[in-house]
Length: 240
Image (tube, helix red, strand yellow):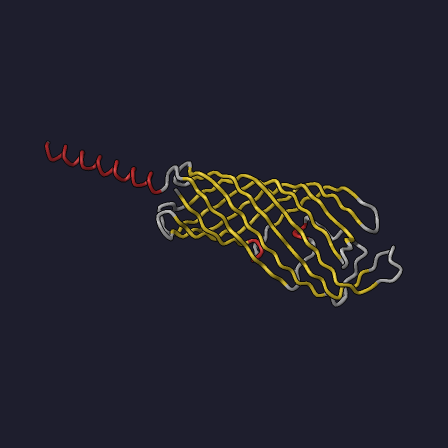
């Protein structure tokens, strides 16, 4: 009888100890992290992910060369609800510049179509919420899926030289989608992360201001399901 009691007490102590370890390791920790992406391309699309569409239908491109540079950063703060589930707030900022060389531009208001050099710049800022489900929280390498919802504002414009803006676009839109990723525990509080977007639905309003032609306000929406280097983020997390 004494042996059984000793075994039961020892087992209970082990359970309590294990629960404390799980709690200290995973449960109710604050999460502070962020990711970044830097991407260049020689032949990018000029529609900026579908937000700024090819609305200037008078453009014709012959022997055009494109050079795009994109930098984005996404800090976030969250809290673990359970070892598998976390909730938080995220920010994102995206800066994009596309240089276009040997662009043949023909606009009805222009008497002489011409080859020009132009530069498209855009800045986008967003704020939103996310949730995360971690499949294997006790492992050193963790896999997770992260649904999100953000509200974004974007400004884009094209300069054809001498600060001559031929069009400008302002948008207010929402992003709803899913990221997936993995984290690697460097230490008990620091992890390296790799995150990629797999589904992103965008819906919003767009104001188009043109140097030549009528201005307009339109609604737009699109669904992106492809993952490429422009939406893969590297980053770090601190859990306290």
